[in-house]
Image (tube, rainbow, N blue to C red; front, side):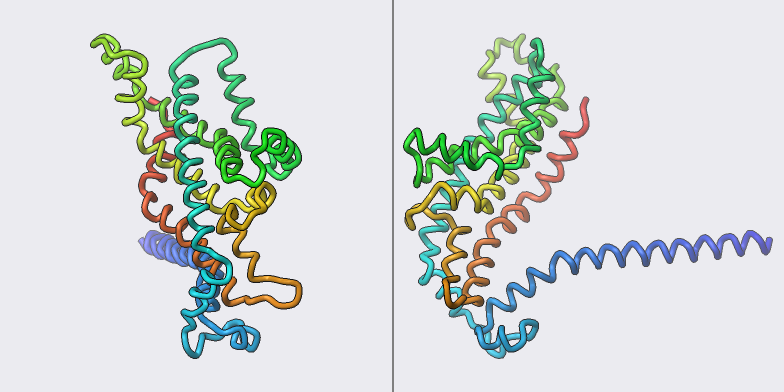
Length: 286
């Protein structure tokens, strides 16, 4: 009897230690993730003198003027509009094309289907920076340099592999009997695709669209490579305007970074449930 009691006590002690360890790890990662964002927000409300005097202190008086300076000095309003139009159009085009490709691969059997899908999906592993010269040459030859259309086309294309993987995985989980019943009732190919498959795949489409939008919004390298005129710059390029050869307006730059971060955070927060549901549903077939 005594051994059983000791065993229970020992098990209880191990359980408590495991619980403490689990929460310690969770809090450690939470601090690791959130501390830079909180520091960035606090610093964006300081003066440059306060920032240089003590980077980790709180502002004596919150300087909301830094956010006004961010808009006035770098013309962030125009850049935000450019980023919105580029991201929205590229996301819509990407998801529509990826949905059609995913439907073809998921529902039709043809020779070399899996080989084609594997090769196409391998685009996820190709470093985008390695393709800078080919992309620059292509857009230069077709006359789309210094144009937002170049970014829209490019972002649509580079996001297709991951979008097809996500949407195809979700479409594979849809029962074929639904389409077969619709076919018997006289529903044609386009009717089945637009009226049945797309609505049932809504969660997967939202998942792919969210990842695509965040990628388009945060992309810097190609936005800097393919555009040169101020009226065609995106929000990520505007952050550089606070740094010149001699001085850097750090607090206004940090305010611009906060402004650039907000849409991505809001987008993920609004569609968090759909994203998680889409990822898990697409991973289970049948």
